[in-house]
Image 1 (tube, rainbow, N blue to C red):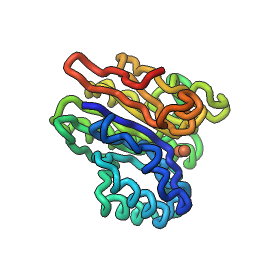
Image 2: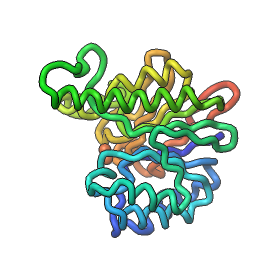
Image 3: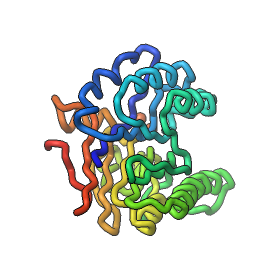
Image 4: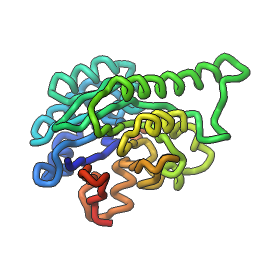
Length: 247
Ligand SMILES: [Fe+2]
Ligand SMILES: [Fe+2]
């Protein structure tokens, strides 16, 4: 199966038509399109409507997770309903199966990486912040545990590893992802994970178990692969995950 993946479309009402240009040849190149959050710019239903109508014109199924921008307008339920109403499979702790491949998605959250990750200690505000990351990791774990389909593919907005954050200013790394998201990916043997959010990070890395992780934030893909369509192509074959995007 050929996966096309992109994140951070940041759609506005003025973006109408952009998806049709950006993914013009997707039917010939991929079997499914994965969108890794920040689907809209300000989390407005009218932005979601513009995106959903454009996505409806694509000849492949679309699987998506939300990003932090999709929460900005305080109308996330309407954003999700609008996208789902037009056939986008929005995952928030759920899974779906497309052509024999299982997809699991959550937004994720921040908190930092490895030994320097923020712990639940001190003020209540810190504990709440950490709890949000723990809850997102638990949602991912439960969805992976329930999904019987193999192979499994993970979609996130926030980064699960530090490798794909590198390139961003170190001062903001703790707000770009959490290694709490890495553990379920490895424990349940997902074959590949995609995320967005890190517009200035690095395009790929690996979990501790060696699972490939792709940062598919569109601004980063445009800067890294100028002149190419702003999405990443990965193939899942019997022998494993193969990169298809020309470097
Ligand atoms: Fe973004
Ligand atoms: Fe984001």
